[in-house]
Picture 1 (tube, rainbow over the protein chains, first blue to last red):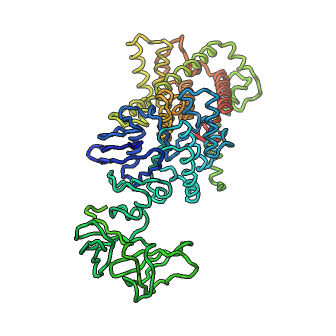
Picture 2 (cartoon, rainbow over the protein chains, first blue to last red):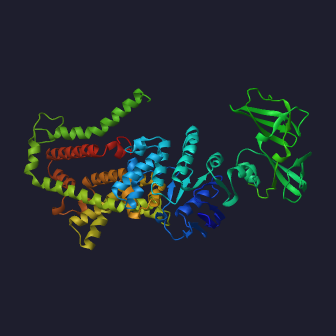
Picture 3 (cartoon, one colour):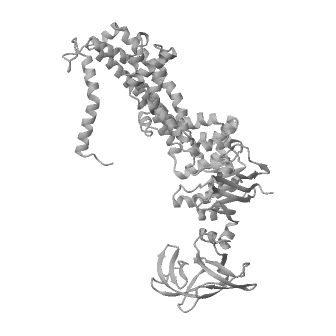
Length: 354
Length: 266
């Protein structure tokens, strides 16, 4: 049995279902991200796990125990809020010690555990500071220490890195992963940032419009998205409507506009489908080679890589090339686009517009 | 920082002079050796300060005003803080109506309020009592506290309270350890504003005082309706001194700019 289980969790506000029949599990000690665009219901889900919102339907089971009816203050979960929510009139030590104080932990033991928690987040030297005297990254660590010091069964992170600038965010990603591993705490993180989810998680639960779209490892979510939404939400993707002509054990035949394409084997019935192709899987070849010919419409240099928008007969294609030390095809140049048939993802045609 | 142009410096000078001129005049007049109000004073004399000691009814009135201000401001604060939390954080029917009700003493003309209070206190059998007077003052000054506390409640991050709950705090502990400290600048600022409002309230008070509960403003007012000697100026000067001392004390203890602006000396 999984450590945390959500069964058919639903939250309705009037007619609007913010969270709609959500079911997934989190294994003990793992790091799971709830990923989705803003307003997709991921924060509401977190609030229900935390006990600040009551589910309309469904159950949350933590370590075999049903959480419904248990008030937030008795759930013993560690929560890091988007705003960090530090107690501004208390020092760092008082902030971190607050949860222990509520648990009537003796002063000596409290001191020891606060020191351990601050050590874990590398803030031992700043225990007497007030939050306002600290940088965003440091506050983030205080919030983490405060949540972890109570040795929670479950750590909940609500967009923990969204208030940090880009450089600090990357540092904190690694740091967050280290702290989570060292504390060995089961973690559920809410985020709208796909790179954050990919970098940190053992498993990603993609949510859209309150519904679960995919629940898999970061690699699988990126490599084998099961819907058009997931393919476009994680990373960049070239998506086109196509028609599946035939699907056999050796691969499938597709028609996309005027183009005949080979694809990998697929478990879909012939008919309208959507195909997705990652920009980094496309190579540029001579104008007369490759599956498709196009004109470079835009070329953006990003340091380690080039991003090119290429106009083709089936539509615009994004192509990403690593910077290998020589200039890529210039704007206006005619190029050939080539890819391996197995790099194409064949997805069920999206019925509702996202 | 941007430097001020000559026009804005002129404006500030005029503004500050206008604010301070009455105080300068009152303090100047209080030092006159003459038996009438004169400014600038023809000499320096403490005659009218000594005269306060010969008029113990002023001292009694000052004590009553002080006690009344403290009691009324405290009662009003105890009422206004929960009200501000409910109005500022709650989502319930009648929220706007409740806020309007609490702020209504600001909108009703004070003369009307005075007459209403007079009638109301007689009905309750509280006419002429300190308790009745205190209740009326508490009602008049509640809006001042409510406004300031509401402002600090609006700046409150709800997730701070949630963080405390998730760490195991009970509702009362959350209020005492987290919510109240966070809105403290508004509460203290509101209390002070309320105290000062009560301390110099005249219009309503004249309707409901009796000789045993005469406040300082009422005493001063009835004194100048009979005579115009500089005693009123020396009493006022002492009151100003007292206010300045209070401000300095609060600044020492708490930081005035933190109180009035919400930031600064921390």
